[in-house]
Amino acid sequence: MMAESEDGPSYIDYDTFLSPDFSPTAYANSLVIATNNPSDTPIDLSTPLSRVLFDIQEIDTRIHDLTTQSAIPLLTHTKDQADAGNKIVTELEAQVATLTDGYQRLEKEVIQRYEEANQVRIAVERLWETVRIGRAVARCLTLGRQLETQMAEVNGPAALPSARKEDDHKAMVRASHTLLAARQLLSASGPDEEGEHLSQINLITYLQNSVLTPSETSLRNRAQQIIREFSMSSLASSSAAPTTYSQSEETKSRTTSALLTLQLLNHRLLIAALQTYLRASLTSSLTAIGRALNNLPTLDRTLLEVSARCQNIVALESLLDATRPPQAGPSNSKAQVEEPGGSLLEPLLAALDTSSLPSFFWRSLAEGLAPRVADLVAKGGVAARALRSQRVRVKDGVRDCVLRGSQSLGDSTRIAGAWEREAAVMVGSVIGPLGR
Image 1: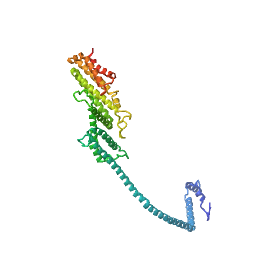
Image 2: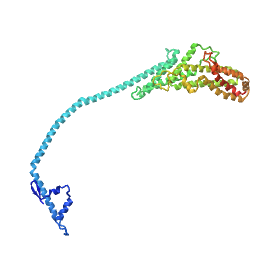
Image 3: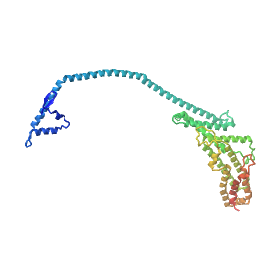
Image 4: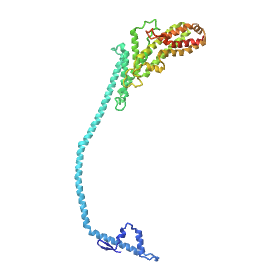
């Protein structure tokens, strides 16, 4: 069947080849069936093959004719496209050159200046960090020098000729404040804090090892020694000259400085030092009374000494109650300083679980004394018989010891009935094991 084309009739059925449903297998099968009978045993393939070859030749001829006829339009179109492309490239090259010049100018005026400015910024930041470290080091060294001067005052005229002996205990408090300031500076080691890099500086490490730590140890030992030696009663020192008012005030002032020093360094140190003082008084009193009960002629003197120790405890309690916690800097934690309205006595009473120090002293003494008396009575002998025979004298002596020792220094008007319970407990611990 002939098909019509733009240039005339054609033997090619373009509609069949251009159909979306065209199948090469179905088309070949139709050619074979069209050129052979169904009853033919040998199938003739040469005829359909010739048809296909003829169609291919026809198509090739058609393509050759079309390209020959349209060669000039195609070349013209191609030339126009090439010229248009060259024009675009020329225009783009000019724009690219303009952009390149702009970038180079921008790089010179902005990027290079930014890099230079960034280097200046880095240098300034490092200089500022160096200045910060220098200031912190200078402040730390200033505190170290100040602490050395104050420690020289604490150690007395031998260490610093210009220091006054009566002021050495007050210098302890000043030195403690300086030590706290240095400790605060060194502990502020977080990011952007004042002492961030101080731990990496050898000079600061040397300062800590040679000044700060030895000074803290010296202050602690000196304050603990003053508390251990605290004594204001003259009951047990009848042979010595009576204590004058100025001496008593000096003892109070020195002890107050020691209390404040330990409180500033660490409030646990203060509690421990006071508990050590009370334990020492209890141990000495318990040992002395135990020996005196075995040798009754020495009992009066021993009870007088025990009364003196209790009077010292009464004086210490009064001093603690009148002393307020120091106003420490931010380096002192909240746990280190008690409530603003409290006194140094409150945490000690809380630690001992008692309402007063004299009551704690007498009740603790009675608790330790009862088994000693019971052991003395169980052993028998001359001491036990003498103790039974003089029980009234011993009873009166122990009671007077408690009432006399519980009085404040210089206060003879204190009501005796306020300490009758403690007196009864002490008398019971000594007389109770004797029986009837």
